[in-house]
Length: 354
Ligand SMILES: [Zn+2]
Image 1 (cartoon, rainbow, N blue to C red):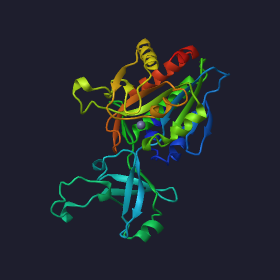
Image 2: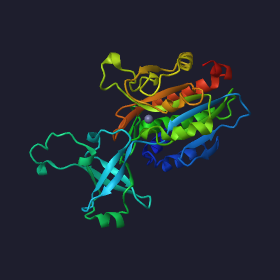
Image 3: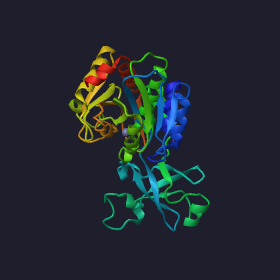
Image 4: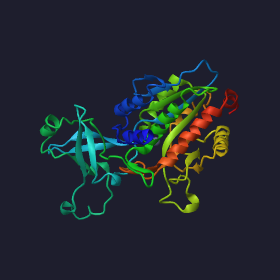
């Protein structure tokens, strides 16, 4: 129950890139009793398990931000122009309800609208849509009302207005932001389950900000931790509803994804092999993947210092980077098990051999 509640709360938390405060505040309540906590000015949260001096450090990471939007301009009629924070297809947001965080930290409901068919000129119908064609409407009738009554202005952050639901029968979650909140949940749970375990290495965890706009939080965090290896949790895009069966590499309810390659990183093959062997030893379901696109915080960590061996443990999320995603409790659970067993079994000697 604790885990499911944590996943739901994290999915619901307001936290587009650069505005992760609510996610961090909630995360702290989950690990306060088992970790020492520290923050930096980018809102990266650092969590450390108590331990004596160790030769090596493992960093466990998940990014705290979700894809969202930011208000670009207020139109005289009281509607808002906006830009994406992170990778969005504008088609995926039209007609959806959103929450805008105003100057008093209240969430104001709005709807993303495009020109209705009634008012379209010849040639406008069927045309591809860009963010410049879209508006957010909260129901105001003037810019003054929007700014003075609704207290919304340029720079106000926005997320899809979605409340997470858990389906007991299917053991699936439907909600927003599972990239990477399902990873955040796995990270917080792993730290709690590692509490008071005898480990061969020091363990530090980070919830890093601004991954969706170019791994900016990790660019800062890596210098504060200086780890010897990194395990990144990700809510990775599930491919099982679009791909041919032989191409499916991150299907929901098929276990965690271990990524060999994406646009940002070729995974250290020695660390990857170690992770695959641990999965086999403990009967954890793994999907190996080679992604044409994509990128993670591993892109930053694996080239830092002397090259820090990094793996990515992905929990498949259907329809990532849209308003609603679906992911499975069992996949999340296998991500926790895999990270936990890697950290419990790994020695400093193993790490130095990667
Ligand atoms: Zn992500």
